[in-house]
Amino acid sequence: MPIGINAVRSALESGDCIMVTLRRFDEQPAKQGLLYTLKSTGQAIPNRTMMKLRGDLEPMDKGLFDDAPQSFVLKQGA
Image (tube, rainbow, N blue to C red):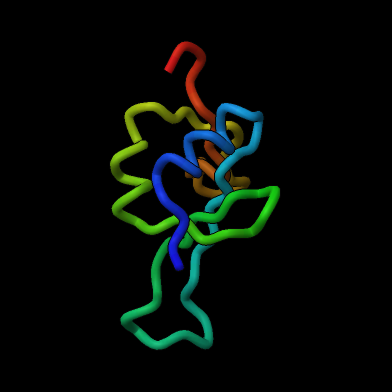
């Protein structure tokens, strides 16, 4: 069962972060793309939940080669 937006927000308020992983190898084409998970539990975050939270998040660190965000945290005051 997917994790809900309230559970994700609660985890972020408790200091957790969202990790970003690129899925492309050994996956069906329909399952390729970005995978968002909570760092502490490893629970997958649905893409639509991530898109709803996008305005309240800020990048925590950048990739080595492409400067794409590798993880997100909750903005201060969000």
